[in-house]
Figure 1 (cartoon, rainbow, N blue to C red):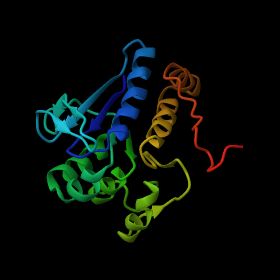
Figure 2: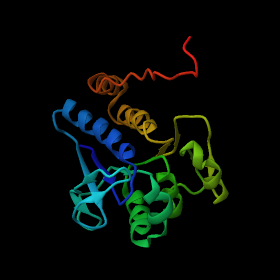
Figure 3: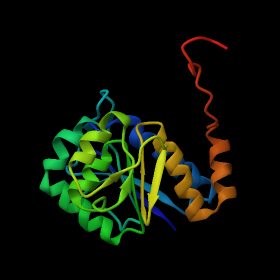
Length: 200
């Protein structure tokens, strides 16, 4: 059984956790409910995310089940508020030590850096924040890749890239064929309509 814990907080970027949430939950369903995914927040009650979506966490930082995978999203709340919140950063650091995998999306990597798990590691983050993260030191920002794996740390670029890294992670946990089945189930086969300024 795999338990995924997805951290949520005010001004978290919605797709940073909703995309992986979909991947993790479809994975669980295809495994006949063997796995579970939960939302974890500092406080009980609704959390308003970056674009206004409100979500209700399942657990708080002090009452969640043991987590096999710790997921940290990005957004304004990650890079400007939560990285200065010692309650959250301490929890991330301690939880990451016990988790088998740590998964960060977008500027969630800033939180992972502040909390410790990303220090001295190779990471990815949103393209617009790569220089800012690198300037913090003790981290190697890998550019122009959707996601990076360094040991048990998986980090990805922004928003939709979190789906890619989540699919890789369920494939690592449960096999490539399983990950392909998840991808097919969620019909994830990107073909963006604006690949260039002018149609070919």
